[in-house]
Amino acid sequence: MIYKDYVQLPRDRIGCLIGEEGAVKKRIQKELGVSLNVDSQTGMVEITLKDGEDPTKILKARELVQAIANGFSPEKAFKLLNEHYSLALIDLREYVGDNEKALTRVKGRIIGEGGRAKRNIEELTGAYLSIYGYYVAIIGSYEVLEAAKKAVKMLASGSTHSSVYRFLHVKKREIKRRRLLLWEPELKTPKKDIE
Image (cartoon, rainbow, N blue to C red; front, side):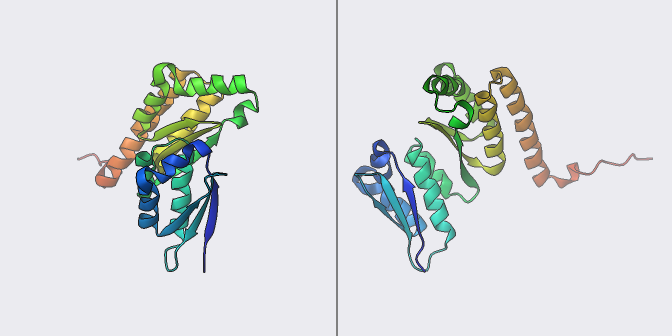
């Protein structure tokens, strides 16, 4: 059975998807066992799964192409080849509608002065952010992805930067504790008093 999927790529991102001498496109095809057909006029990308390949690979290929379409460099997008990483897209029009001035303001809040807010979210969660067009794209493992999504949504909804950073510090501690419990399960059960 042949599986096909389509992703619309902005025309200014076609070069990033193809890469120098086709290197990025070739790597996606090789790593995921798919065929990419890029229409350079419309920006439509056809993803075809090769016979005998795992059908979930077409979903990973779609995510990878979407990550590049939404402003990520191919190097960061290739992090999606790790099975624990995923892509999340937040449409800022859900918060501002079609108002261009409001969109610019919200993007400015998410990026922050000199890129500080974006950098803080990335450092506190370990996720990667890209703000491109109407979307904020986030790459990360599931647990950090949820924290980064919530932080971006809080900023888009008008929360102060300090409350977002406070939330992220709490989440970072929770994630760190959860990871520690995976390696040292004896911390889960309280120690009984010695009589």
